[in-house]
Length: 153
Image (cartoon, rainbow, N blue to C red; front, side, top):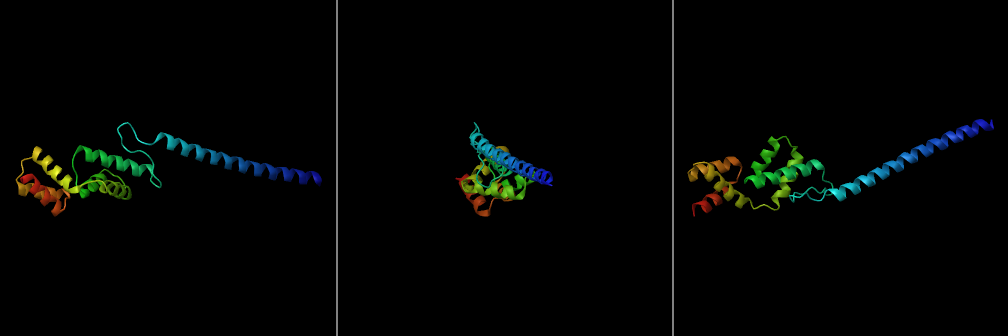
């Protein structure tokens, strides 16, 4: 009888050791992975933010980087940028977050002026036609009016 009891005890001991070893391995992997991400993801050589902020997933950062690149290429309205990103298949929540991040640092009136100038460089518009094109692009009436007044000076 004593031999059977000893074997059962050893079986429990092995099971307990097995569980704790995998637990500690998992903890070590999580710590190592977090340390690697913190050391290797601040910004890239172009200055585009790649650092993972608290609670921000890589998908959100990817959308933010895409939005920033688009804004460097040509001017957008807030609505136009949102539509462009959604049209490329990004998730609504990630697009909303990214556009909000850009909104806090963007002068949308200046974007309207820049968009108007951009359109005048590539298309022959009357000021009325440009105003309509700006509204279709998603600029507000206030932003479009500001742009037309600025470009008319």
